[in-house]
Length: 185
Image (cartoon, rainbow, N blue to C red; front, side, top):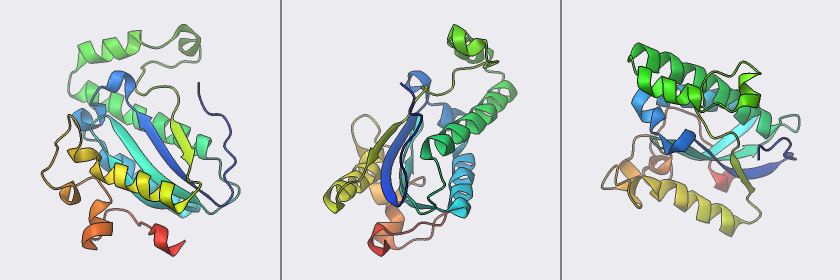
C-alpha cells in the first residue's frame, strides 16, 4: 500500500524504495548520479541526508526533515517518477526492448488509465521513524553493510563501496552529496 502522508516535522526517517521485481535497473541504466542529484535537491529544500546506500536494485537512506512543510511521501514519489523516466529513456537507448515490454505489461490496469507506461519501482516505499539513537545506529549499520551482506558481495570492504555514505562516517571522505552526521543533530 502506498504511503500517502507521513507527519514529518523535525523527525529522522529510515526509508527504502525498490525496483520492480528486484530487477537491477539502477545498475543496468547507471542512474546512480540521478539519485545523487535527487538527494542534492532534497538538501536544498530542507532535508538533511544522514546516510545512504544505492544498490543495483534499491536505495536505502536516512533523512532528517528540517523543513516542516516537506511531505516525505511526495518527495519520494516525485523522485521515483523522475528516476523512472530516466531509466526508461536509458533502456530505450540500450535497445532493451524485451525488458521494456515486460515492464510495460506489468503496469496495473488502473495505472494504465493514468498514462503510466512502465512499472519501474514497487508502488510504495518503506519508511520508519527513527525513534531512538539505538534504532538510528542499527539502521546506519544496516545501510553501510548492505553491499557486503547476503548475496551482494559488491566489495570486500563495505567502507569502499562507491555508492554509500560509509566512507563519510568511517574514513572521513567527501562524497558526491552533502551529508549531515547524525551526531550533529
